Amino acid sequence: MVYERKDELRAIKLNSQPVSTLFILNFWCGSFLTAYHSPKENIMRKFVILVFVLVLLVVPFTVSAAPPTHAHVHFGDENAGSPFPPDHDRSFHATDKMVPRTVVISQGGSVTFNTTPPHQIAIYKPGTLPEDINLHPDFLEDLVLPSPPFPPNTIIPDILIDDPVGRVVLGPDPNFFGHVEWTTPAGTFDEPGRYLVICTILPHFAEADMYGWVIVK
Image 1 (cartoon, rainbow, N blue to C red):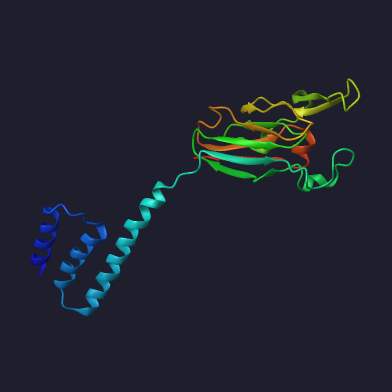
Image 2 (cartoon, rainbow, N blue to C red):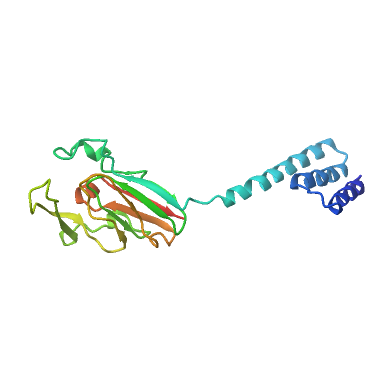
């Protein structure tokens, strides 16, 4: 029986007919099992072969799956919490957040941030933690509010975080008029690791925990 199956399989190959992996395994399994007469042994071997076939089918899909090259993030949600201005109390629960807080992309990819006013994005190299950001007054800058709608020369002192240590890229200045889409420039995520993304407006980061992560694989 063993030689008959091998001859039949060889004949199929010689005729250049397509032979699937499962078909070849079927012939091999039949030849392998007929060499034994114990039903229990045959059942065990069938089980082992079944597991082997499943591994062959599943592993290639698992290995080939890769993270996307691009991700979208909502940087703030103006429809949650209290409006600004004048009140800004409940907004820390949702308005000043990054949604989703963590995204995964492939090495060399990019992220597009849909930013609501008023926020500014800063991205730090892998290994940087929120507690590593220096909030000393020496690393804070003033924010000049646009006129109009604010009175001319209106300044909020020491409100923008400007810690350059480990910073990979700094996004556009805070916007006070509608949504702004900003895509990270080429080279931002060339190295694998977990990048820290923060809002540079001091109370948003320090009090509202407005930060998140971009994981690059």
